[in-house]
Length: 104
Length: 167
Image 1 (spheres, one colour):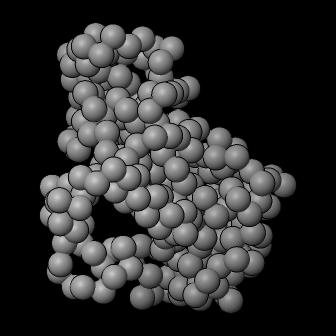
Image 2 (cartoon, chains in turn brown, blue):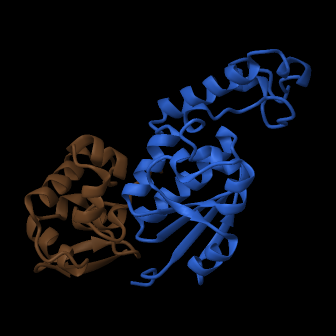
């Protein structure tokens, strides 16, 4: 467990770099982390996913990809296009949550 | 990123319902983590991608030493379903329903839908040429998402450097 300064705020992160306290998250952090993950601009659909994850997170863990597609109405293709190369971890990082715990 | 070029290839050789899921679950997890996925379907594994078979995969209690009565809701500990009972007509359908129900309750999609998810997420899927010839099949017998029919040699070429899992 250590601290990392993102968007000017010191937040607690675990060894894999996931934030451990969802309450420390801000929208500015999301923009900053998205850039680190190679997503230059967060569009309306990106926010749709992020907001859904924030509102449906359990114990600070991000929902699974299938939960996200079911919950947002976006398709699997959309999700992988919005967050290319590993949406499960990318979404969790950007939304300031832990890795999803489910398998689907 | 350290797993930028990681690539996992699955060889699916079984057509039983229980043996269909490992590659689907692991493949989906891999894609979610940014790992490239290739799936090669061979022999009975082609049942997973055949239009006529994918919705009818089954699990048989006969000779399945892991299938215990407790799975049927009867708490008998390690007492298995006797093989003699397993051969009764309907037992395979019964066991299959049991598993499908469990999966549904856990929110796990059926095989056809799972394959669609994998395909949409970028997994490459291929049928084995020799098995296709043996079973007299053609590309149109397979569900959408199956890229093509390839030889074992092609598979070797396309999985250069990949981690390979045989199921």
